[in-house]
Image (cartoon, rainbow, N blue to C red; front, side):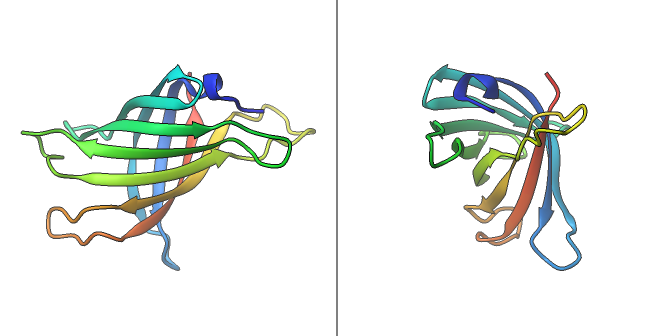
Length: 133
């Protein structure tokens, strides 16, 4: 079961528009640090200089609720992601007790919080992030 310290590391990220054809929305690498039990920082590197800086809040698991993470991604001034802003909500995927070679993953949704490059705010997508290290 995931806990706040196990989120630290690198995760392969893919997202898909919440439409019937599930068109790809984004791809890259999440790199997370957990400076405290309830905070997360890091980056989403999509290649070609497209990077978001991440700030998040971790809600630890309880007997009744799984761990969740709320993350905000901010574009970098002076780069192609300048003024980008995305919100992410995720939780660990179910870990099957009889699963074979199951790799830890996060599943959730993402919201384009601000318009950019002629695309509107409010677009949503589903994402999966699979642990790499």
